[in-house]
Amino acid sequence: MMRRMRTDDFDFELPGELVAQHPAPRGASRMLVLEKDTGSREHREIGDLVNFLRADDLLLLNDTRVIPARLFAHRPTGRKFELLLLRNAEDDLWDALLRPSARARSGERLELADGGVAIPEDQHGEGRWTVRFDPPLDLDRLDSIGEMPLPPYIQRPEGGVSEDRRDYQTVYAANPGAVAAPTAGLHFTKEYLEKIRKAGIETAYLTLHVGLGTFRPVSVEEIADHEMHEEWYCLSESTAAAVNRALDEDRRIVCVGTTSVRALEGALAVGDGRVQPGDGWTRLFITPGFIFRGVGAMLTNFHLPRSTLLMLVSALAGRERIFSAYADAIAERYRFFSYGDAMLII
Image (cartoon, rainbow, N blue to C red):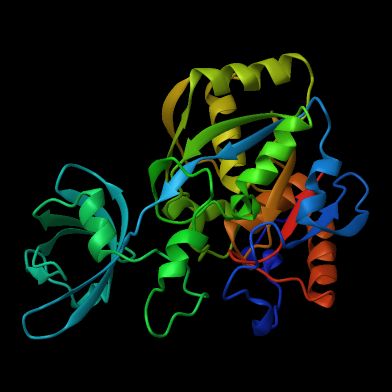
C-alpha cells in the first residue's frame, strides 16, 4: 500500500537571511529555469523570460488587486487587536482573521483609526470571525486606515511603509479584492510586458482574489487531510476564448503564478476540459499526482516550506526535482518568498 504524503515531506531548512525583506527593482530579479521533464537547470535573469517563451504561447496573468486589508482596532481600555480582512460578505460584514482571537468578545465595539468601529459577531475557529463595520467599509476608507497585508516573514517593526503599497502590487492589477499579492507578477514592468507582446506572444488576464486558500499554512500531518478554503475567480469572454483556442491548437499555456494555475485548472475542472466565461469559486488543492489539463509551464517564486504552493509546484515538476532546484537556489543565494527571485518551470 502506497504511503500517503505527509506535510513533513515538503519541509526544508532555509537560512533566514535569504528571506527577501524588500524587492529588487522590478525586472532585475534572478530566475532559475527548471525543465520539468529532465530536471536540468539554468541560472538566468527575469529579463531572459522572453527567450524561453514560444511564439505561439499563451501567457496567462492574474490581474487581481491587493487591498490594504490589515487594520488595527482597540477597546476603549486600550487592548489592541489586528484584523486581516478576507472577503466582503455583505455591505457592512467581512470575514476576517482577528488577533488575539481568544481575547475578542462577540458584540463588543472596537475602535478604528478614523472613529468607526469594528464589531466581532460570529467566531468560526482558527481566528476567523464575521466582523461588522460601522460605518460600512469601502475602498476609500480602507485606503485611509488600512495597511498592505504583507506576510509575517516580511518584517516591518515600525509598521507598514508607503513603498509597499507600490511594491506589493503588480503593474497590471485591476480588480480589487486580494489580501495577498500574486507575487510572480511582481517581476513585470509595463515595458517588459510590451516587449513580450511585440515578440508576438499572446497575453490574457484572469482574476483570482488571493485569500486564505492560498496562504493558510498546512497544519495537519497528512496533506490529504488539509482543507482548502475557497477563492473567487473570474474569466472574461476574451480570456476564455483565448484559453480554449490555445487548447484546441495544442499551444502551450504559461501561467504567471500559482493563483493563475489554480484559477485555470479550477475552471477546466468545472468545464470538463473547457473553460466558460464568468465567475466561480475554487477550493482546488493541487498536490503531486494531479493531472494538469491546461498548464504547460509556469513562472513562480520560491515558496514557504510545508505550504500548499510548494505542493503545487511539486505537482507540476515532481517533488524531487523541485527540492533539488531549491537546494541549488539556496546554495546560489537566491532570494526567497514574496519579494524574492523567480523560478520558471518549463
